[in-house]
Length: 325
Ligand SMILES: Nc1ncnc2c1ncn2[C@@H]1O[C@H](COP(=O)(O)OP(=O)(O)O)[C@@H](O)[C@H]1O
Ligand SMILES: [Mg+2]
Image: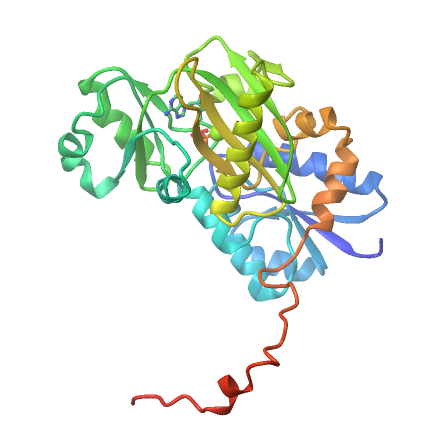
């Protein structure tokens, strides 16, 4: 109980406001649990902020660029300060939707057909789009919270939507629009906590619906037990395929007919009291304070698990390795 915990919030991306709300909710829960908490605003110079605060553990309440994509995790690795959530690689892979989709496919997980366009290749859009058709969804390949996301119905709307998405991180992901129910699965420490269906009037779960109300939550989702079990298994596979740890939320679209598709893995899911992850945790019997405590207990550094010494293969160490120079 005597550890000093730094709650890192704010950050660089478009999701700063959500992060501040997540951070405050976490800080209050940690204090209610009897911890010593420092609220740290993450921005350029974060290394000095962390060092001056003299913290033992970092609780990450950041979303999006820098905070969720492995860069802040890398800084904390270098500083030797354990942090909550996924490590450097898992965070980076999950934040890059194009790479994440490649790994989902390698693990036989269905994900919407699509392609990635860097801002420098806008002229190649006609050949990249090929027969993908319309409607399609255009979104930043490296961002979240539905910022810069457009549902595109015609050829004419495509390039402006891609240019807009590229403003958030330099790359756009174009995907076939999959019509269906929205479902999200919460995973904690490699175990499924539960899932929630989100219904809304629009065709997309856009920023307004996400943060200003208008969404309905169905816990558990309105699906058969068999279909739900399959989706929850897919969520675990998706999180494992990227090497994620701690609290992870996996988003799906579940069509009436046809296969459910994985959209993305969120490695630092929203954690205000009204956010999806805490809602699912509550339905699973975990209060917000208990959830925050569990996430804190998982704080670690990459490779922190003890490695067994190679005692049974002394020949590996005996032969010096020859270097060509
Ligand atoms: N291929 C798609 N088909 C249908 N809806 C989509 C598709 N991609 C995204 N959406 C909609 O946009 C929302 C946000 O997309 P998502 O990929 O989860 O990114 P993020 O949450 O990081 O902004 C989804 O919840 C869904 O409503
Ligand atoms: Mg999402």
